Amino acid sequence: MPSSVKNIAMEIGADKYIISGNGTLIYDLQNEKIIYDAFMQKEKVLKIIKICEENSIYYNVYTKDSILTKTLSYNALFYDNENNKKPVNKRTNINIIENIYKYIEEANTISILKMTICDNDKIIFSSILRKLREIQDIDILEVEHMSRKNIKSGTQDIPIEYFYTEISNKNANKWTAIKYLMKRLDIKQEEVMAIGDNLNDKEMVENAGLGVAMGKSFLSANKIGDVFVKDNNQHGVAEAINKYINNISN
Image (cartoon, rainbow, N blue to C red):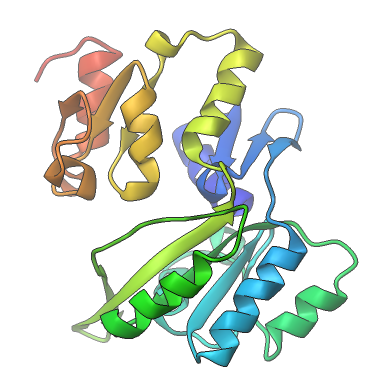
């Protein structure tokens, strides 16, 4: 969400533009306004929710302001755990709603960035994906691996493992949003560097003038990218910026 990304942008001194929701939205930080969006249609979101509800599948709805969820499970549980480590003004807004379908149906205006579908059973998850692919004008992230996260409980690390996919408006992705900024700022494709790790970064890493894949990631494992750097725990992003922008060699 813009608010979550804005907190990170403030920490690193990035004060121009942020792209959030997998490229669904571009926010102008200096003028504090949305300059581009590709929000999901309400009717499509309601159709997806109905499929999930009928098949008892866990889902979240990401609006531009909050994550809508029925319970704190899977990714929402992870975000809630991360919130406990942050000051109140930097927490991800999680809104627990008993009837999300009704909430969205009755909303006069609602800006939906994307949806996330989660399940820990691969067979059940795959069957839901087949149903979702019948819906037109949406993009479904084709993630084949499990998401693995850890949450702290006292001195213990508790693993959370689940299959997931992200659903957005047709052709809404990070590269499409970057192309909009390129045109607005008169930046050439060969002047763009994109750093990514997961499947939702694939288009921008493949199309940028210099595509950088993080170590120990989906992209590096599948050899997607022009260059490869260390993982996030070994300062891979700093490595890429220093080497290819600041011309500093280790």
